[in-house]
Structure formats: C-alpha cells, structure tokens
Image (cartoon, rainbow, N blue to C red; front, side):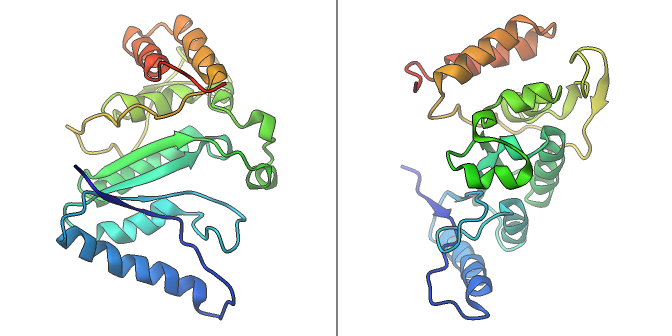
Length: 222
C-alpha cells in the first residue's frame, strides 16, 4: 500500500493578515516530515477564486518549494486545469519542476465543473473539455508530455495542422521517467474526442497513445 498527502490549502475564517501564508508555510513543514515517515507522494490541487476552500492557484510553484525540502517523495498536481492553460506553457513549467525535483513529478490534466474558475480567463464552462487543447493546435504537446514518458520533443503547430511544424519544448524533463497512470475518470465526450483525433494523426506512436488513453477507462462517465 502507498499512502500520500493531498493539499488544497484551505484557509478557514476568520482571517488575519497572515492566515493564507501560514497555511502554505505549514504545508512546507509537514511534507518533509511526511517523507521521513514513509509517505509516498504529495498532491496539490489547482483551484481559482475559491476562498476558504482552496487558496492554491499555483501548485507548481508550491511544489517547486517542496522539491528543495525533500529528496524522495513524489510531487503531483491533481489536476492542471487544461481549459485555462496553453499546453506548451504547461509542458515547459512541468519540465522545469521535474528538473528541480530530480525527476519526481506526476502531472494530472483535467477540467473543473465550476464556471467561475474559467470565465475570468475567457473560457466558458461548455468549453471546459480537452477540446480547447486540440483547438489550440498544441494538444499533441500535452499528450506526448503526459503519456509518452514525459517526452518533450513535440510535433505541433499553433493554428495549423499538427503535422506541419516541428517544435522542441525546452527545458526537457529528465529522461527515464515512467508515464503517469491513466486517468481514473474519462467522460464519454472526451473518449470520443480522443478516438476521433487519433484517427487523424500521422504519427503512429502518438495516435496509439490517444487510443490507449481513450481505452483506459472502460466505463466512461456520461
């Protein structure tokens, strides 16, 4: 059995001038102790505009601090809110975090069910699917990064067919890292989207990654 920690950085009221910072400092103290006690991993959520419930809008920065205080415990983000981030930017930041932690990063990619976390960024809840990654022309970056042993050599184009331009995301994550486990939930719409996208991708390795992801949950949520 593997046991991990999960943080949302909850800050209950009444607040003082130091309440928010104190919760973050407490997490930074607790995680090294958890590592000493044998905990396997620590995960931080990403939430926006959720006072009291979660003051944790930049989990990669918090985990960067954790990486300098620990040596073994794995560092996870559960999850990066895909609709409000460009996947190239995500790949760059996660690769940097992977280097800082010496290869201990696990990245989850998903969406939120709360429209107020999306609309300030110009994204509608109806767009809160992985479609936005694909529409940006850079979905292939995220797929390679997350499901091909975090490889950051990508084939993508912004606003063009994904096979017309080769880019290399820098920095690259450390080599030799196993792929992240498949998602625990996958909606029926997302499953169909992955399958249809795989059919149109020329790169056989990437196409198979998409198909594998679509098959990874046998009973998708509707």
